[in-house]
Amino acid sequence: MVVPKTRSLIVFVVLLLVFNAATLCHGGVTSRFVRKLAKGDDMPLDSDVFRVPPGYNAPQQVHITQGDLEGKAMLVSWVTMDEPGSSQVLYWIDGSDQKRSAHGKITKYKFYNYTSGFIHHCTIRRLKPNTKYHYEVGIGHTVRSFWFMAPPEVGPDVPYTFGLIGDLGQSYDSNSTLTHYDLNPTKGQTVLFVGDLSYADQYPNNDNVRWDTWGRFVERSVAYQPWIWTAGNHELDFVPELGETKPFKPYSNRYHTPYKASNSTSPFFYSVKRGPAHIIVLASYSAYGKYTPQYKWLEDELPKVDRTQTPWLIILMHAPWYNSFNYHYMEGETMRVMYEPWFVKYKVDLVFAGHVHAYERTERISNIAYNVVNGICTPVNDSSAPIYITIGDGGNLEGLATNMTEPQPKYSAFRESSFGHATLDIKNRTHAYYAWHRNQDGYAVEADNLWIFNRYWNPIDESTAASA
Image: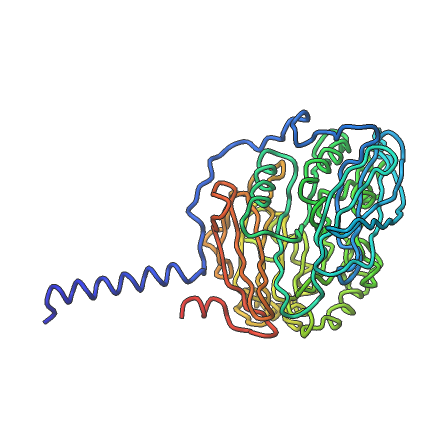
């Protein structure tokens, strides 16, 4: 016979175990958080975030990205409106009075009834690792000054923190996302951006003025830390009825990438090494079938990844392969069929995508057994497979994806219809801490988080470790 006090203790212990299991096991959670429904309105053009910097021919839309394969170069870009001006960049190490200079090139383009300003691209090379640099643009007219941190030497146990943003746009929600990222106590050092920048194609005649406003809006972040660019569907700007038949014209003129450094033939797919990570950017909207340039490049690139030097293998793309929302469903399926066996073979750690305007994280799963006719079409747990994270929740113009497939698939670990951003804090070759932050919370609040174990050095199943 169980006495009342003992019975109460047993009930307490059982409830505690249930609570712990619910808290620690991340499998199959559809968040109960309900975002207040509100129309996703763009900020008006006279908002201070779109302000044109004062001064004659003042540089605007200043942005930086990695300029080579290993982080020893920085590509600086900006726009001048009154005249071409100088493409010179002056730069110096923090605390030094010795300035060096680099010279870039100028381009411009026309799109329907729009003519761009003068777009400058200049690469600074031979940077010292883990060093703060100041730089100036607008030499000869209105000079503007910024700074950045060169990354540490590529190495397996170099701590490094990435921010994750996608589908940003220029709405009030976009501004909230960027503010939350800037004020997050976990300071990102580089943004991995998974596509859909300005949403200029959503305005009449693909109004390219909206490329200019977006460039000024994000300058407060991207002039100070590099963003690694991925092209999304809203960068296509393919509008035959306007006479615009060259895809990606505004994006490819404004946002250069160091694709040649990784032997790519296209600015839309390439790789960079940064700290402990080898980052591969793929193009969802460029040909990716067998024998195509992207296919051949990726086939050659993956065997080159040296996990003893860059243990973390991260893939960026725009269209997600695994998605349990009723938006853009299966759009990434043909690419998945082509490349997923490689992701498992080479033990990719994480795949980040956008496109779906919500947040979702999967378990480590694969569907490589599927061959169209065998009927095996359900993803299964696979410890060699990556975690797939959809982070197309930056703000955009079109609103949130709110309609989810039911029941929630077993492969879906956590999903929520909210705007936000994420951080990936790599500690060493074995461990990284991942967190997703929704815009409605305080800057330090983590709505979803997970310790991630490296597939090459520490291939433990995260869900098993969490529930053990």
